[in-house]
Amino acid sequence: MKRPSLTKEKVIAEAIKIANETGSIEKVTLREIANNLEVTVSALYTHVKGIPGLHKALEIEGQKQLLHQVKSSTIGKNGREALISLAHAYRSFVLQNPGFYLITQNPPDETNPDALKDTQELIAYVANIFKEWGLENEDAIHAIRALRALLHGFAHLETLNGFQMPIDVDKSFNRLIETFLDGLEK
Image (tube, rainbow, N blue to C red; front, side, top):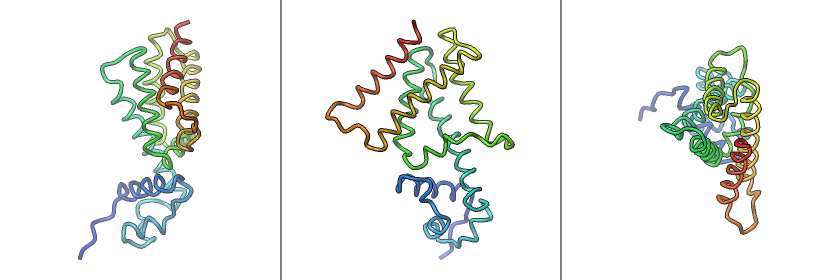
């Protein structure tokens, strides 16, 4: 039986799958990827340059997927409605990718245009939404940082089962976002 051809996309997809199953990108090994794809470890090197190359590819893929999810969720929306949709899309991305997500938080390699492209586009996209509140330039960056910290912190804690009290976590998240948005309007 002939094996399907190996591609970089298949290697990355398998790494994401393993990371999400194990809860950590650090637990992904080339050996496990190769075993799951029924290839030799050396065959992977055609597509990724070891673990460092795999991590760089995963960072780029993560930003691309996060950007797509955020943009898809906000189509036709603006202002408060857009930020609420963005927040839910971000949280959803984290919860769907508990092992893969954290690598998307690494600073992009500034020497690699592919690594910068989606990160810069995401920042510009969110900054454009903040214009509804008159936030531009440095003020927009402060707002983006605050929103990112808020979303990252909540969603990451959620992936770690950090909310054990018998109170609806969705309600807590909605209140958090509403409080942030109310602060923007003051």
